[in-house]
Amino acid sequence: MGLVSSGHPCDICRVTARPFSRIGIVEETPAVQELVEQAVREVGDCVLVTQNALEVLDVARRVRIDLLVIDIDAEPGLVEEVRESQPDLRVLYLSDHTDEQQAGIERSPALLTPFSLGEFRAAIAALLDRSESGVSGGAGTGP
Image (cartoon, rainbow, N blue to C red; front, top):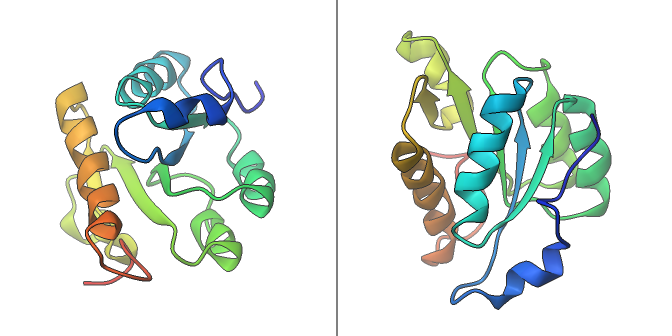
């Protein structure tokens, strides 16, 4: 399955009360993909969804991605490769691990599964608000 953009171009997302964000979601399970895509789209963000982690690399070379939502066990090194072209990329890991050490990879937050859509939206909002509140450079990458 290729990269999907919520069924409508990202330019349409601009009609929200706040600036939209481009959120890339890498998820292998179609049912989870659909739920998280819907949760993000409902708040007016542009959603780019794929099952193939390597597609994100191609897209990141051409389009700014504000937040990447990815399984903590996904393609090793993928986030680092995306950050080569987008150093300010914020990342939300999805994890079924309860090990705090693994959840703290790169000091990015991890959302433990199962989670509610409200918890998912809150985690995304917290990461996006970090840079929108005036913090510059590297949001989601530092302490």
